[in-house]
Length: 222
Image (cartoon, rainbow, N blue to C red):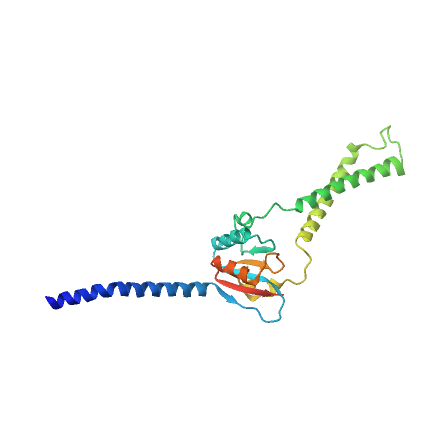
């Protein structure tokens, strides 16, 4: 009986120690997995950098990262996904597109040009009285002016979109990156922060992406 009691007391004394070892092993495994999840690929020396990107596996992770980058105050950054993600615009804090201003300017210019052209041709340059009708009236000039409105509004939209997107651009650093090409159009969700952002700092930006739980961090070369 005494031997059994001693063995039981030894087991009871060993339980807290084993539990402590087990918890320490879990913590070290968790730290190792976190390091593996946020692996950072360092850039080559003496290379101009376009930005730093974080790679995510799910839309939810990318949206959470976008919210953190937005709250951190970054301005020159973007999220690339293989398909549209509902709610990503709000997560990024994007404002309404400014393309509409270009469309309106083009449409207003087209209407004005149409009316002015018909007035000049009929009432100034080549006056012909037909059936006692006025030399100029906005009613008969409206169809042509309307077509000019649509035409120049379309051109304004196209040129405004190209201007705001900084097009044409014959080369983009992301398209030369293997990780981006393999993931952004397939099954990965990528957040890219440009080095030209006023708040960009290599250490702080990488730490921010690490805090979002991204699987991989990679620097994008120019």
